Length: 343
Ligand code: PEP
Ligand code: MN
Image 1 (cartoon, rainbow, N blue to C red):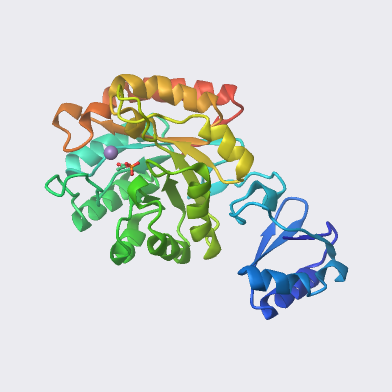
Image 2 (cartoon, protein in one colour; image 1 turned 60 degrees about the vertical axis):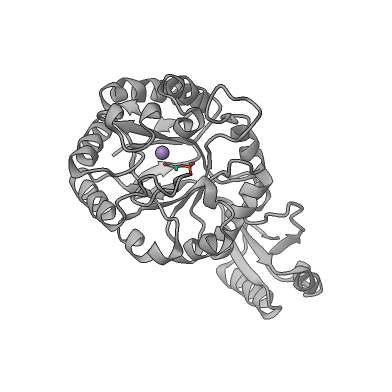
């Protein structure tokens, strides 16, 4: 990590980048509010090379220091404690901005999606979620509407103006997903699908990266690093419940992950209480707890008629209750120093 002086000029920054690249390493310049830091990423031998480049004495360079964590671009260190704030079509997330992402588990029909989209928009949601490709435990369960689902999401976006969050499971579907997704969701089961992560990294599209059901926070951050390494800076981390010995609920929502991820990383942290809980009655209390813990956003499932939902009905909030829910979440986010990011 090469820390430039506050007064460093663009030419001095470019000269350092060139020198790093000439050593065969990747240079990732990160412009902060005060100063620029250049991450020089290579394998161990290349790192040794960087040390011999004499960058420490170069004009504009303040100091060169190693990043001690195994993840580099995801680390809090590389941004000197500054938070990353993402701007998704005008909806901010991170820092002082809180985003509520809401919608059905999966796109089922035009009516179901558009009705839900209108309701969550009116209640102040920042983005609309909905899966067209669904990772299901059973290969016999509904797998999503695929391209037809993407088409309906595009219609919902056109109608409401809400940015779309939708999952990509297979890199072969990247092109059609890119046509509608403002944020690509990587599901818990794909958190360590490294070729998929790299492909999404190269696409440059913002990413919501869900924590695997048995993944440590270091593993989650290493997965984020796969996206960041490709030059895509727009990554949100998502805690969605992990497997523990407790059997009274679907998974255990690890809310300690929120402040700990913020100590370790500059990336925004989102919480998904729906998949963690598995049932509706837990979703509101855990959403409020997530907001109080400092989450930068919540992604939550909502359905106009959960009894008839094709998947995850028992955990979906009733669309009729959503406005009240959103107001409660907003008030707790405000206590944690965050303003709701809406249209
Ligand atoms: C989802 O968001 O609908 C989903 C399947 O989530 P996860 O990957 O966290 O299980
Ligand atoms: Mn779901």
